[in-house]
Every structure is written in structure tokens, then in C-alpha cells.
Amino acid sequence: MLNKLSVIAGKSSEDLARRLSRKINATLVKSQVRVFADGESKITLNGDLSKRKTIVVQSIYPPIDTNLVQALSLISKAKEKSSEVIAVIPYMGYARQDREFLPGEIVTMKVLGKLFKGAGASKIIAVDIHSIIGLKHFTIKIKNVTAIPDLVKYFKKLSLKNPLVVSPDQGGKYRAKEFAKEFGSECIALEKKRDGKTGKVQIKTRNTDEVIGRDLILVDDMISTGGSIIKATQFLKKQKCKKVYVTCTHALLINNAEKKIKKAGVTSVVSTNTIPGKTSIVDISNTIAKAIV
Ligand code: R5P
Image (cartoon, rainbow, N blue to C red; front, top):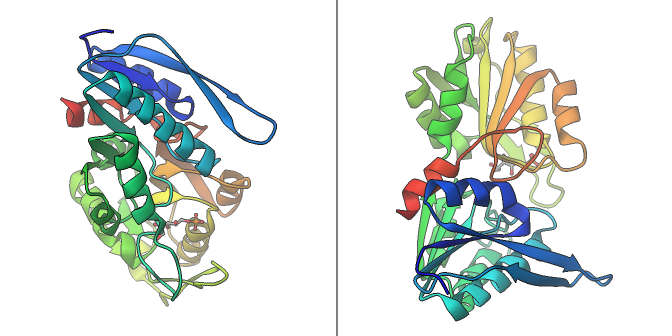
């Protein structure tokens, strides 16, 4: 066993874990995963762990439950060897289930709070968790870091025409405001309505003159099916804006969402590497490293 810090690279976050281990000068321990025919994960660690502190990096994106069980298993193994285990969960799946929206709904975030503690984590680091209500379900320390400064840095390099930051809904207003403040532009938030049962999205804003002839940056925490961004883009294009750029921390992009978003008229989608993929061009390992040391 080692005295130096160790970073376990969960299968869903191999590249991010490697970058992070370099930044905090820790030993990288890779995990080997074999998924059985019935869906069970068999995990083997390749290397020794620190006696002092181990950082497990595993994002919980689809297959969500598989990646969650793998995260818990890695934390549990790390706790057998290290006195302190920090779980870095770059994308916290289930974070949208942070309250009982309709009677009888289970608040799965509360269950996750118990599971991470039970597995042996003493601290969690998440990135732009869907809502801060989710943080209340954890009884261990949880630090929510933001990728907004990293995303802004990217957009500052582009030459945009009279840019305006837009939130696709009122729930994301503060996030968009933070982006706009850092970016140095104005900001507006649309009114979005999602049907609680079907999940269908509608933009309720009637019209807005502020967008005419301007390049827009649509800012959201995550893109799943792309429904919210597509509806917002279609509305903004009708209002005669110029280009529409989309940025988010977590790009799940389920069912060809990127293609559908582009078809709606979006120039480009820029996300971070909390979820690896084609649009994940902004690296947030530095931001996570700062939260660890
Ligand atoms: C909702 O409140 C979130 O911030 C996102 O706007 C939403 O989860 C994105 O989902 P989709 O891409 O399926 O519309």
C-alpha cells in the first residue's frame, strides 16, 4: 500500500481520472470491468491503493444504474485500504429526482445519499449538480463545483456578434446569470413548461425583441433528449436572432440529440468532459483538482 494519494479511474471517467491524477500528483489505478450477460459488473483493480487517501472518479451517466453500482463498489473497495475516500461524481445521475413532484414519487437522491455514505465515502465532489436541493440529501460532505468559468473561457475565444446569454427556462436563470456575468454580457430567461407525465416541453414566452440580430449562447446544466434546447432554439430563430450556440456542463445527448439540435439550427454544442463524447471539449479536471487540495 502506498502513502501517496491514489486516484481510481472508474470505467465511465477514465480520461478525466487520468488528467486529475496528473494535476494532483497521485498514482492512477485503473479498473477493469467485465459485464456479465445478465448485466452484472465484475470489477478488478489494477494496482495498490494509498493508505491515506483515495479518490474514486466515476460519472453516473447511462447506463446509470450500472455506473452507479460500479461507483459504489469502487468506493467500498477503496475504503478497505484507505482511511479517507473521496468520491468524484462528475455527473450525478438521479439529481433531477430531488423532491416529490407528484404524490407517491420516490426521491431517489435521498437513497443515493445513504448509499454513498454506506459504501464508505467521506466526501463527494460533484460538478454543477442539477439543483442545490439535491445536496440536502447527503449527510456526508458534498462539494458542488461549477464548470461555468471553464465554459466561459472557451466562449471568450469566439468572435460573437453582440452576444446574449439565454436560459431555456426560469429554473436555469441563476446559472445563465452567472455565465453572463463572467462572460460580460446581458442575460434573459425563457419560460418553459414541461408536462410532468409525458415530459413534453413547450416554450411559453410570447416574444422577445432583445434577441433580434444577436448571437445567442443557450446555457443549461445538462442536455438529455435535447427537447428543451430544440424548443428554445426554434422559438429564438423565429424571433430573428443570428447564430445560436449551446453550452452545458453535462451532455448526455440521448437518441441522436446532437443531430436533432443541429437540425433545429444550432451552430455548435459545447460541453465538458463530465460525460465523454463528441461535444465534451472543455476539460474540468483543473476545477476538480482545486476542490480536492
Ligand atoms: C431541466 O430542468 C434541466 O435543466 C434540463 O433543461 C433538462 O433536463 C434537459 O433535458 P432535455 O434535453 O431532455 O430537454
